[in-house]
Structure formats: structure tokens, C-alpha cells
Amino acid sequence: MKKKLFIVLLAGLTFGIANNSSAAVITLDFEGIGNLTPVGNYYNGGGGTNYGIYFSDNTLALVDAEAGGSGNFGGEPSPSTAMFFLTGKVSKIFVPGGFNTELSFWYSAIYFPGSGGVYDENDQLLASFTLPVTPSNGGDPTGAFSPFYQLGVSFDGKAEYVSFTGVQNQIGFDNITFGSATPAPIPIHEPASVLMMMSGMTGFAFLKRKLRGFAMVG
Ligand SMILES: [Ca+2]
Ligand SMILES: [Ca+2]
Ligand SMILES: [Ca+2]
Image 1 (cartoon, helix red, strand yellow):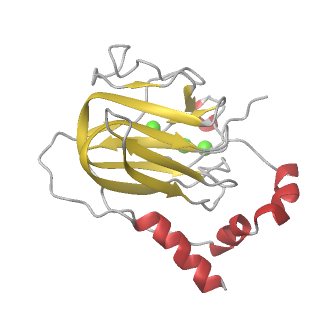
Image 2: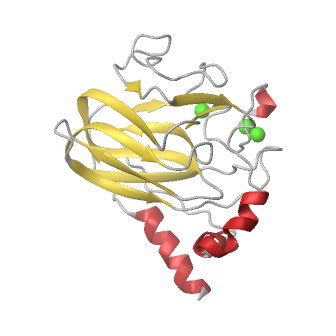
């Protein structure tokens, strides 16, 4: 039983094989955006490097608690700011002009899985991906949403936007990279977390009682 579930998680984390690409690689690390501040147009002339990339209104930056913010995370690939959402179920990233063939990012989701998609300018789905529940190792030194896991997606065609779907305040992202799908390392040390995910509704009431959010808010 354990073995089967383990393979399911691997499958979710390892789809996509990087292609060689000479296109410019852009990584958004969210550093420099304030705690609980909308990412919005930060990378579209709003203070960060102007890549012409903008985010759906509900997408917020979150600074780790160790750095003075309200982030309940650790092991983020670029300290100390990540991205998440407190309203809605979907965060979208718009890349006018598009990007080719590869996307990668890091995420943490310790209670609920997420999913996502890459779309072209006609809203056609180019690639979809699942975001399995990730283990929690205690943070850096605190932060339940730790560590982050890397995931890469390869697709054909020119993508115009990316959607991340999940439970609000229960999934966070960092180092979102356009133009590179570096193969995901698979540092899985706690298969028990997968079992918790797979237990589904049976464990839901228990989880809900001790649920903590990506941000310490509310
Ligand atoms: Ca932390
Ligand atoms: Ca940190
Ligand atoms: Ca960061």
C-alpha cells in the first residue's frame, strides 16, 4: 500500500522533461514586495524588474515570520518572500507576449493538494499539472509550510498565462520561472504525509482542528 502511494506522488512530481532552450529565462522571486501586499503589477513597471508580467488581484506576497512578516513557511528557495492567496481558489499570472515550452516553480501545500494549468492566448490548455500535498519539516527554524518542492512543466506552443488552483491560505509558491523546466528533485522523506493526503475525508475533521495557514492571519 505504501509503495503504491509513493509512486503516485512521484508521478505527480516528475512529469515534464526539460528541453534545451535558448529563450530568455525569467524567475520571479517576490523579494522586495511587502508582507500581504498584492503582487499585481510589481513585475510590470510597479517597482520590480519590468518583465511585463502581472498577477490576478487576489495574489499576495508574504514575508516569512523570521524576516518580520506573517509567513508560516520555511525553506523557501529565495528568502524570505513567497506568493499565495487569501481569497478565491485560483491565482493567475499573465505573460503578455507569451513564453515558450517550459515553466517551473517551487511550492508548499502541507494539508491540501493543488493543481494548475498553462494556457495560450485563446484559453486553450497547453499543459496541466497536479500539486500533491508536501511534507512539513518544521521550518527555518519555524514555519509549518516547509520545505518547498520544485516542479517543472514542459509544453508545446506559446503560453500566455498560468493558473494555480488550491485552497486559500493553504498553498504557497516561490521562484516562478518562465522558460526553464529544471527537472524536479524529489526529496521525499515522509511518505506518511502522502498517506494523510490519501486518507481524504476520513482525516479531514482531524486536520481541520489543527489546521494552520500559509500565513498567520485571521
Ligand atoms: Ca520560516
Ligand atoms: Ca525563511
Ligand atoms: Ca522568494
